[in-house]
Image 1: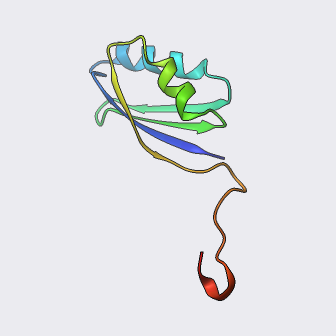
Image 2 (image 1 turned 45 degrees about the vertical axis):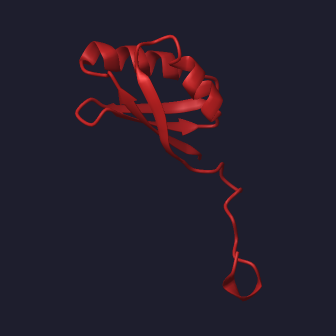
Length: 85
């Protein structure tokens, strides 16, 4: 299942975490949202696009960066002949 990791600047309290996670849970395709207030990071799993994730938080005062995203299951690159990609 694809995973998206976000760094969220401006997420300073539990109310901020609740706001961000509630908005992200409404994004079609998101199955789990896990926030860590101490690091300012949010991890999402599911089939949402990066654009949909960023759009969900666009109206907030948060500055959001996608730090990593894994490809959807089945889209991983496989080594070519001789073990090269």
